[in-house]
Length: 388
Image (cartoon, rainbow, N blue to C red; front, side):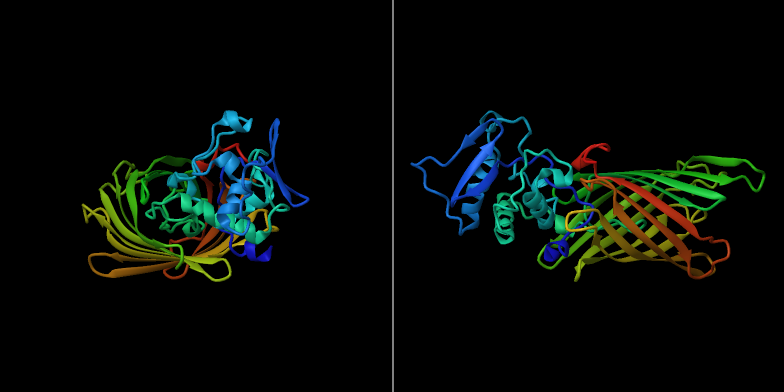
């Protein structure tokens, strides 16, 4: 299964609501079993043509998912696990083919789902399962939805191009200054994403032994995918965020002015299960006396390793960060490097963590090394305590 591992995209859950009847190859006849029910093809029915992907779907999937992919009535299948609508692109496009393959091959429990979704790894060959997955893709007919293959692992700082339904808590700093950020992201239609971020900060009070803290400048933003291709492994987005002057300037928790941030982001699939992110943007304050105008660029290169063909995913990355601050008398260029590793925490792989170290490359005075951590929850795929 090495070739399947090479295709996996980490941190993705799979088909949480799918339930397919078990298929058993016995003496050349395919028998279908569901909870409390055993049914073979009636003698008056023609056996599916197993040389085609449609025939494989009819043999292994149609009993539960229906001939149109919308799912049959639960009273027909004899269990109460909701069946997904495979024609619903908001559901069917989120996961890469590799994840569909894994659950079809190994069954629902391999990703923390109900065992109503059986394993087909012994009934079908790997190639037959790939054909079934290819047929499942035909039920979504709206090509505006970017595919899950383009949802590359999230870096700590860089905004990725793929739209998400997730929440992220980030914490970083050093012994004298800690900064946190609560981020909520929600998809809007096929290509949009709305987000709101609430930063918090705590720092030493000028060596007096006490700490100052509070809420920083709240951010709201919108991102939209304007081009994507699963065949080329590319996705491009643009967005705009606005930072509100909600933080306390005296506590160094805010800039005291509105700041607008237009940006573009891109993601690229690379050979050997590797990936790259690029983001370029500006920070434009409405009051230049309180905050400098900035040009920033960010780049990420990473790859994904798996603990066995079906296990935990690890994504080591290196993030390169640059910013040009346009001050009144000069332009100041700052560069940092941020090595990090993301790991999936639970069986369903919709809870992830990332830890890294941000190292200043130039102008290091007053810019200490920082340890940064995030915890990510893809809430569309289940609750915090689901799928462990």
